[in-house]
Image (tube, rainbow, N blue to C red; front, side, top):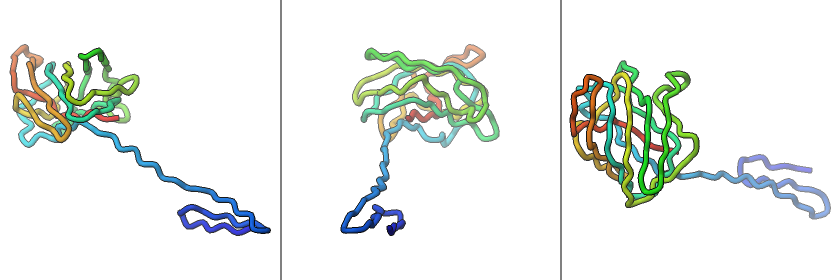
Length: 166
């Protein structure tokens, strides 16, 4: 018996014109994300509670929320809730551990294109901030309704730098 192990569909050759094919198939799963990207002007930054809306332009399946920290700081999300249009998902921070910048929801959920969802994101330490009331990303809009810092001061133009992904 002879095997051609070249990383392509392997043909295992047997006797008397009997051929057995061992198929190797690479499956790539493409997942759409909502990513604000890093902030070009991340300061000032302070922990607090962000509220606003997310309106995806494509369906986005979410199970994780990554928070971009300010350089040299531990900026992270302590709590996140995304709700609206029959959806209500929340998750709390588990500490810095293996990846203290990523918060994981219990199970995946989908934000549907064209629908608007509310968010509440409570941040700790110094997360990167987009100082604008509305931010167009590659796959939708994220808006700031209100940001209340840990000292009680309110703003309407602080969007946390985050990535929502599977």
